Amino acid sequence: MKVLYAKESDQLSRWAADRFVEQLKKNPKSILGLATGSTPKKMYEYLGEDTRAGKVSFSQAKSYNLDEYVGLASDHPASYHYFMQEQLFSKVDFPEGANTLPNGVAEDLDKEALTYDRKIQEEGELDILILGIGSNAHIGFNEPNNVFEALTHVVELDESTRQDNSRFFEKIEDVPTHAISMGMRAIMQAKEVLLMAFGENKAEAIRDLVKGKVDPQVPASILQLHPNATILIDEGAASLLSEEDRESL
View 1 (cartoon, rainbow, N blue to C red):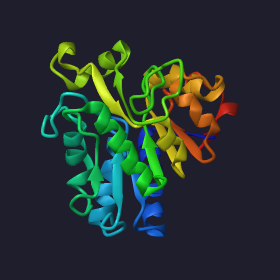
View 2 (cartoon, helix red, strand yellow):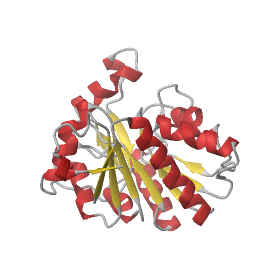
View 3 (cartoon, rainbow, N blue to C red):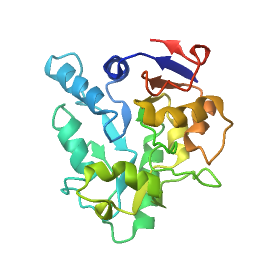
């Protein structure tokens, strides 16, 4: 696991975008793993700019997202379907039907989770996957637990996660209590993983990821076992690490 540091988060977002560009140039039919939230927004902005400039094309690629809230339809402004359409899908040239997210309003949520997991496995490994990290070290919506959940599953969100995400809703009561999350098998099978963390509120999670033991109570710690994982952290997120723990970008 490599830990790369830059003082400014924009530099890290540009680096991550460049890795996606390189992957798509190497294999235009790449299977991409995508994340939502504020952390990857600048990276997606750069990819939109690169597409408009003719530097990259998504025209043969496919994508699978990490998660979706239970109970939010795809056209709900706080859904991850909506976020991805606004932040990336409408800015690049994915073909119609190339982007897949869990259905948070499926009649049978457990069946939806297993179907989603099977779709990913049928594709083979994700070629490159972008991750954020929660303040409690969750990745996707894999919350702290006694075990690492292998398969896509319905998860009850921790109160800390709901508090963190309440900024996207009018009030905390509007934040869904459950989500469908990609499991650890698909994450760990990805050929390359990039995890980005910005700000001091992620510093403890990053310290536990980098310095702690592999523990399902620190879900992101499983990335210590990944053969090609890169952690991208800015000044705030790196504040509890020593210079020896990281490498400057």
